[in-house]
Amino acid sequence: MDGRFEQTEAGGNIAALLNQLIGLNETSIGSAGVQRAIVQAMQVAGYRDVEAYWEHLQESQAAIAALIEAIVVPETSFFRNPESFAFLKRWASQTGRQQAAEAPLRLLSLPCSTGEEPYSIAMTLLEAGLSAEQFQVDALDVSEAALAQARCGLFSDYSFRPRQSVAASLDAIVDRYFQREGERYRLSDRVRSPVQFQSGNLADPMCLYQTRPYDVVFCRNLLIYFHQAARDRAMHTLHRLLKPNGLLFLGYAETNQIHPDQFESIRYPQAFVYRRVASPPTQGNEAAAASTVPPPDLPLRPELPVAPKTMADVAQSIPVTPPINPTLPSAIKPPRLSPPAAQISLSDIRSMADRGELPIAATQCDRYLHAHPTSAAAYQLLGEIYQAQGIDKAAMQAFRKAIYLDPTCVEALLYLALLYEDQGHFAAAERLRQRVQRLTVDD
Image (cartoon, rainbow, N blue to C red; front, side, top):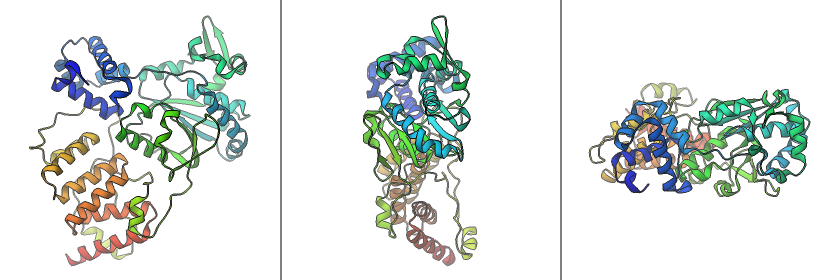
């Protein structure tokens, strides 16, 4: 951010806040656009001074929500990029109907904006011959205003632009599923009933953390607004949210985020759809494990896995430091001002992580390591923070450095063992567990 915001500490803090909360890549909408949105939010809140506004943000969840509303600009329409829905209809009429005969299909739309995309998904499945009882569409967005509008199910002509993109078929769909109310269109309950809206943020590593995986996920034209670290976390989350062989729809500018070990491309023109690989590759050695893209669903603070009986006694003797809190706050919290890097301690950094300020905590931990490059405890903490963010490859590297600096670092050994085990590298995990057992028995 440039101009008067960048020149103030408060302006930098607001930029860091947006970076943390919604993964905002400022260049995606331009510094001027970000500044205009901040000024708009300041004026609505009754502030003219950026320092006073920053203080207000630290004390008001409503102010943070209003700031996010000012930044997020909905851009959506029914059946946008119609090739995606053409493929979805083809899949639903074949594979989808077979799966729905056993259990209702689960689909996810995020961000759902004002509802056009999730409702388009529902209409596509109905057109494919499924009943409303055979599927459920979950729809998430960070904007409460957009969600409120989506729940109303009332749309203007603008939501159907451009009609020529799906030819005459859209007119037939409008006649079938909408009722004219003056200058607007009311969506039928048949389409609305299987769609459930809720607040959610893909930039949050805990997004839908305890939700059962989905058959289909639409996440189009969101990653382009994220900075790279947020994109990496988001792709990890999307992988976690999909069933094996589940379908992921992306925007055309986001296909470079796909990792071939996790997703395979489905050849269908302009659909930009990928299938989650059913199982990750497995190797029996640590070198192969280091290059494997990490799978999802690791807890923030792993506990000792099931092991031979002797490990039960081993676990009792392992010293455990206070964990990073595995439950992130449901309400968005602003980052607190931190002391200068030269003064910050590992305890301060862990406190940031416990508050859910994971990107800032990771940055501070990197700075700490520049000043203390041989600190095994710092590398262990950095590994925990990366793992909490879902960046498991970086977490593994940090844990390895901690173990290199301190071969007796039991917790780092256990973290790394669990990561190996979760990737299917059971031999490497067992070797690390044996090291832990020898260390604790010797103690």
